[in-house]
Image (cartoon, rainbow, N blue to C red):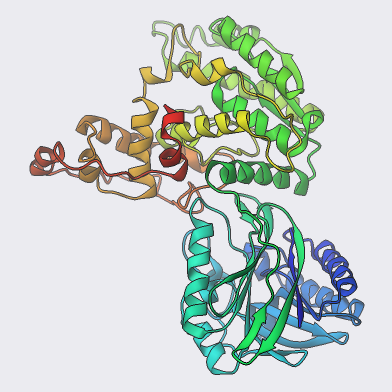
Length: 577
């Protein structure tokens, strides 16, 4: 039996376009001699469709397009394709078997995830325990994504006669997800004794990024086929029936991209698909001469090409010559359009307009934030005038503690580094200077000047300002934030890692207070297992603060300082410093 695995990039809501892509892949699989072609979870609708599922017109249009696809692909391999399916007023996450011009069978998802980024119980009905589908004389079990994360569904399929397990997935990327998926698949193969093909989609959908990285395990848990990550692929797998059962012949085993390289690919793919799927001609960003905007500029060029990236330097009287030089050098290295627009006239005009109202008060962060808001207004005007989407450039450390200005540097439609801590930004910047990712549209060269990587980070909103005037050093801050945000560690345990109690309590307070800003922030690529927005949803109005018993403070100083770090921090600590 020949099974084609179609690791493709659908677009949510584009029923006609997704069906056309499925038909094109079916034609290619027919040429390769496939008996069946498999598509990822909800491929026809795009994943995740969220509340589109509740729209009757969307349900009806899905059924029409599914029947058209079946008729269009009457000759050639059978099709297993993810789709929504309505029965008796209930809507299911399903896989349809299309063959001989019609819909021959449908199996539905039994285990609906309702944690983290997933909210399927909101829109889908849970199906019964499934049995295998008869596909060209072979009994194939089709557990859909979450169905393989526990043992019951695959166990039921094995007990009801399944010979091969094929699991269509819409599994978003995070730092640890590739290893987790493989461990889950190995567990299911070990329990059932059946070979398993794991098919994942690739591409960006709003905050989520799907890395593909599909694979096939034989019944002895050996890896027969590994598809690449971060790009589309259609791979024909060949299977033979042997006395112990079906076996997949060894095929291509692609080397997977890990760590900082995987995170960089995620940022590039997430930005590219957000821009392209929403039909923007390109992007515009403020290029300050700092590390965050430099990394975002590099990501944008790698995603879209230099001709679709416009950088604007917005100097004030506090902008240093170094920043002007570094921004220009970065833009030149990337080959992008670079303009300078002084914010001084607009800032002076606002100050003049407010002088009577502000009379008798001292200058403070209000005047600093006016500069940021002028920059945000200018960048939005450029975006409105020319149609390019404004990309915002704040990192996770800043957004955690509210070190960002609403309607200023937070302006923008998308943020590719939203889920990267500041120390991780440095790691990825150094990684990009040393590597040009596969498929990148930027230059094979150092694209971020060394001085940007070594100078003290600063917002340059007042004379001689640095970020550490207001925040702990980023190595310390990020360790506290990873503990509080990613791990939800008690404050006492964070202090026990060697941090000053007053620093940890300050960071905890800022983390809670900044929730209202994060609610208004642009969407951005999800990298971690606990990003702001989809994963971590805290109330804005929230008076809870942890009490720390005095004995905890006393014992904290001698507690072991065990690592609680993201992969980028743990693997690249020396680079980050």
